[in-house]
Length: 278
Image (cartoon, rainbow, N blue to C red; front, side):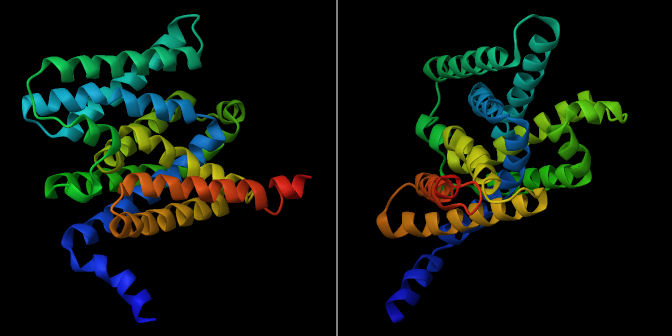
């Protein structure tokens, strides 16, 4: 019993571990809520696009000595607007527009890293630095998470209808164009918050896996949201503990746990699992 107690309390002796636990739970929860909307809307690739598109913004912000979150948000929002413009003004379909924009932005970021003199660690940008997040980045993450949460709460019902049935939402008078860009702006904000902890690569999993897991367990959106948040928080806490005890990447441990939970759910879900469907 004492060994188990020490296993849980040992990391809490260090301030950076307490901070890592707090940030991972915070980011995991908001990503889980948003992932439910993305799952219903079928926007997994959109999350991938925005997460990659923030790279040049991070590099330029570092070079200009301004907050990295500001640069990331500007380029994340710019990618969203550009995707919408290509979709609305050309014959190119949305999936192709997404692929064009995120690969172009990401490649531009790699060029900037190779040409601008800086001490930017590409690994931290791609895979996060949860254990070394600065007080300034911590405050930025909290503020961005609160803003994204308030936006999702205020427009919850409208966004739900927009994701589930945009045609009906337009029929009853909802401004679907506003909801489209609102959801994308919240997505960009969430990615900016998560980018500083798990990186722009692994944030994709945090925006997809919890919602997909919960989607296999229930047909009710409220229950889906709760289950997604619970799975994300559980993965964030246990993943951070495992990273301490096994000296492994915290973001990697968190995403691996989320993936394992999804695989278990895919097999054993009472209604939509592989066993139940057979």
